[in-house]
Image (cartoon, rainbow, N blue to C red; front, side, top):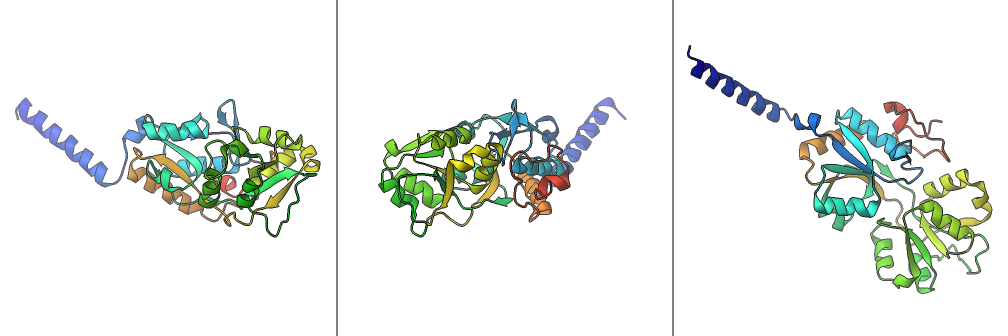
Length: 281
């Protein structure tokens, strides 16, 4: 058999092997091109120290899902506004965790199935606020028309209804922050009138700084949705087959994510069972 014929057979076999692997749904490139997981610090959902994972029940859950799906990844810290800008530029094969699905985001990203539904967004106010708060009729829209200065997280979505109310309000009354702790410190010293926040963040912040419990209180909003599903959001350059593997891993653990522990009670050990059952100590 001539060397030329042997070379031809070798090429044909290699081509057939590549085709069979693709049909089987394997993603060989994933082994050499790890997914970049973009994360920002937002206890108790995600906790980072020096840019590396240090707990947070949704961060632990996401890493467990990627491990379950056998997807290689690297973690990179990035603020939410830059994450959205990065997705628009398509400069990374990247995903980010815990995002709400909005029509604008669906134009530039793929979303996993939901893996957590947060508690309804509420309003934190100074405990001795001079403004009368009637819990039965309190709404964000009414507060915005009352001229309150309200702190919100930069690049966040609070759900479509609240987002629209914020967009239609006077920008002078909305202050954007990159850090929840800074907002609550200003609120405790009455340098802000109110802060939009999830009860999960509020509970964690008070556990970390008990003095906040005497300075601020949480009031429900009647126009806040019951709860918003959170997803893993991926750049649309992430192959659909990889998204399917992520969804399958989430489905494997679905329903096992409970109430996040207060304070720094997260588990730093990322075992697959404890990462998703956050009701454990």
